[in-house]
Length: 421
Image (tube, rainbow, N blue to C red; front, side, top):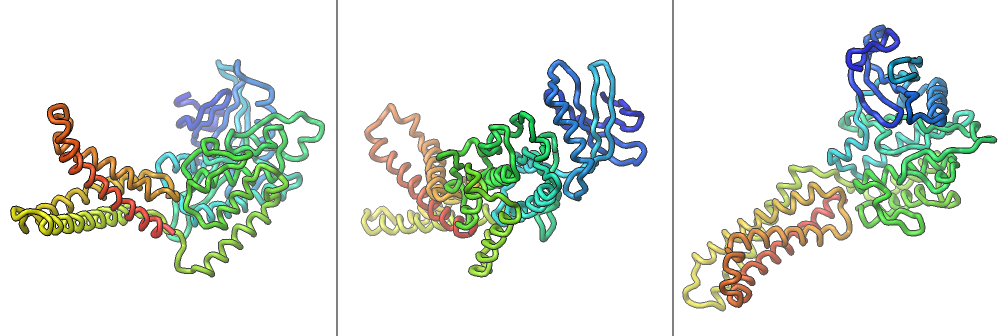
C-alpha cells in the first residue's frame, strides 16, 4: 500500500495496526494537509457478516458523536482492489500514546494520577451513556485509551478511541447479541452477550487495576469472580474499596451510574485530603530512589563494619587493631554501596509497592550479595577441596554479611513504603 492514494485524496503513510480483516493506517489528507486515521474492513476469506454489522455501527455512532476526547468522524468510502472490497472509515489523528504503551515502557502510575485519569474517563462515559439511546463502548481497556503528554499540573489529555465494539441499547431489542470485548476487562454479564452502562464501569475499574499493578487483570487471582488486587498495591483503603465496588462481578453490588461512581470517587478523595493535606501519595523519582538507597545502604554497611570491628577488638586477640576496624568499615561501605544499587534496581523495575515489598527487596539484596561474596571468596573452586573448613569458616563469612545486607535493604524498603504514602 506504500505510496498509494486512497479515494483520490488520502496518501498512505504507514500501517498502525493489523488484525484479522481489519487494518488501521495513518494517511495524509491532501485537501486539508492534515494527518488522519483510516480503518479498513476487508471482505477477505476471514470476513464475517458480524464484522460488517459492527463496522457500520461504528461509523453510524461516530457520526452522531461530538466530544473533544473522542475521534471525530471525517469520511467513509469503499475501495475495490486485488484483495477484494474494502470499507473505509476516516477519523482525525490523535498524536498520543496508549496506556498500554505506557505500561510496556515501564511507566508507574500513582494513585493520584489514576484518580485524575478515572475522572476524565468518567466524564467521557457520562457523555456517551447520557445519549438517547445510550452508547456503550463495551471494550474499554488500556490500548483503547490515549494519553497526551503530561503538563505540570495535569496527567495529560485523555482520549477514548476504537468504537468497533460499540452498542446502543436500542440495537438489542429482538436481536441475538454477540460476545464482544476483551478477556480480563469484560464483566460476567458481557460473556452472555448482554451489556449495560455498568459494564463499561467494570471495564474502567479493571483498566485502573491494570495501571496500578502493571498486570493484566486476568493474571491476578480471583475469589468468586472478584479480582484480588489489594495485596499487589499500596493504596488508600477508600480507593481500594471503590475499585472493589466498581469491579464487583454482580450488577447488584456494582456502581450502575457514572455520576454515582464519580461522586464516591471524589468524595473519598476530599475526605483523605482534609484528614491528611500534606501527605498525598508521591510519585517515584528515579534519581531520589537511587540516591537514598545507595547512601543509606553504604552508611549502614559501614556502621555495621565498625561495630563488628570493635567487637572483634573487645573479644578477639591482640593481633586485631584499629587498622582492622578501618578495613572492616571499608568492606562494609563497599558492600553496602553494591547492596544499595541492587535494591534500587529491583525497586525501579518492580511495578508496584505491596505489603510484602520490604521482605522482597531484602531477599533480592541477600541473594545478590551472596552471589557477589561467593565469587570473591573462591568458594566454588575451593568447595571440593576442603568442604568442612569452607562451611564453618568461609561459609559464615559469606552468609552473615549477605544476611546483614538483606536486613539493611529490608529496613530501607520500609522507609520507601512510608515515602510513597
